[in-house]
Image (cartoon, rainbow over all chains, first blue to last red):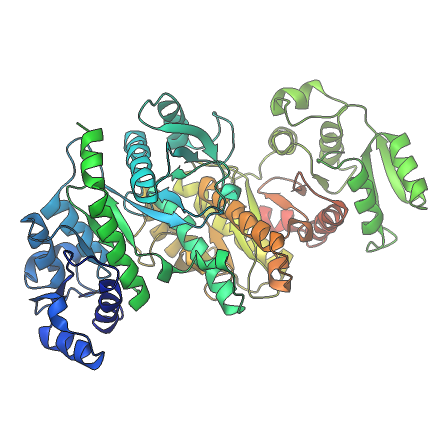
Amino acid sequence: MGGDYAPEAIVLGSILAVKDLRPDEKIVLFGDESIINQICKREGFDPSLFEIVPTTEVIGMDDHPAKAFTQKANSSITVGFNMLKKQQIDGFASAGSTGAMMVGAAMVIGAVPGIIRPVIAANMPSNKSVPMVLLDVGLNPDAKPEVLYQYGIVGSLYAQHVFGINNPRVSLLNIGSEENKGNILTKALYPMMNNSKEFNFVGNIEGHDFFNSEKADVVVCDGFVGNVVLKEAEAFYEIVKHKGISDSFFEQFNYENHGGTPVLGINAPVIIGHGISNAKAIKNMILLTRHVIEVKLIDKIKEAFK
Amino acid sequence: MGGDYAPEAIVLGSILAVKDLRPDEKIVLFGDESIINQICKREGFDPSLFEIVPTTEVIGMDDHPAKAFTQKANSSITVGFNMLKKQQIDGFASAGSTGAMMVGAAMVIGAVPGIIRPVIAANMPSNKSVPMVLLDVGLNPDAKPEVLYQYGIVGSLYAQHVFGINNPRVSLLNIGSEENKGNILTKALYPMMNNSKEFNFVGNIEGHDFFNSEKADVVVCDGFVGNVVLKEAEAFYEIVKHKGISDSFFEQFNYENHGGTPVLGINAPVIIGHGISNAKAIKNMILLTRHVIEVKLIDKIKEAFK
């Protein structure tokens, strides 16, 4: 179990999630069995509704992700990835070390053949019932145009299958609306995306086009820019919260309402939660994982790269 | 006269600004003399309080900036830059074509010796009485580390002399707090900034550190990222405004309250206003220009690069 509020928030979030699952679906928890049982008992919840896989180690935020993943073989992340690899579980989610999660995704699960670099998407608030999909948000800060082109494909599939958006409009985040605007990366990328038959490219969007979906459903950018954009949105929400402004639109900025984000372009459903996930966020992380499994997102991506 | 609401907003803003000027200070207006006189008359304002330089051409948003700057020799921007060059005026500001303004700044005024690339800063809202200075916000989307290092110097001088911040804390916008985080650019830049004796480097900041000045007064980033960050803040303000939320903090996001931004690193005070500037924004643009002249910002920058 990982995350800043583990194990408490993880167990409580899992208890909340169980209510939304079908009888044939089961949450597998990785962690200290006695603590899990203790929290369940306190909450009046029957722990046998979970499958508990006891783990004894924890990969901390200060650990070197790659080293810890190998050395702490009995950590929840390492054990979880090994079970996912063996298809003993259908999907794996954690709010623990993002670095270790990425190591597991790359080393144990591996990229879908044809994918140059897997990517992490984020849900940006929008004026529609579904978020705007922003990718990459931090995995590949120096990616080449070919890599960002593939974000268009996987981002489009994610928006279509997970958010039910028909023929998603894919855009390029840029610093002008015209084709010839931008940096070396976006200038090289625009014609590639514009000629694409693999997704519905609608052109450039700019920073002021965020928070409404007038122009696009999917926003492609490099991992450096995406990470800054995402965290700036978090800064807005902090102000809104601090000012006591209560509004359903701004609640979209609340990480608790998001269940984390799938690693797109790998061979199995892996969802990375926010480190500061509370019980509600964990619940949503589990439900997102279930959703990604159910819509067979991985298969759709594999088919696209056949 | 330039800007989406010219000449009306320019003349009205100038009338507003006159009240804050000393008797020995004068606003020089470039444009159609009869229209200027007409608006002044309607407003009951004595146009002789302005110096009017008649111009007959306008560089439009669809014009090619460099070509138009040369070909439309009687446009307000071209005439203004020529007078600035001859020191017939002490500073020049316009809400017209940013491209043409940059051409004038580069071709007519020129960079301070030692400056690799001039830069545009923006005022980001903060929880202090002074904004956070963000630069570059769009001029140099593919700048080298040496260029961004210089932003630290000019940004620090701008924060110190224009906003009165003593020993400004200069930061690097990055995607992690640690030195080794980031993209190729920020990884190369961090040690350069960290070893600087020319400004007070305080390390990395991230997207979630915006809108408060806990960590830094000046934020250095490349022009692509800075442009997106700035415009994302505009998007946020649009929502707040749309929701009718009235709050002095959010008013910092209002472009009307900013008078535009100086081009830093050139040999004379040049201020670029927002295209959609209304009268209040124009007034503030004029007062910012006066302030940049008064504190001798250009001289301070020249001294730093001697």
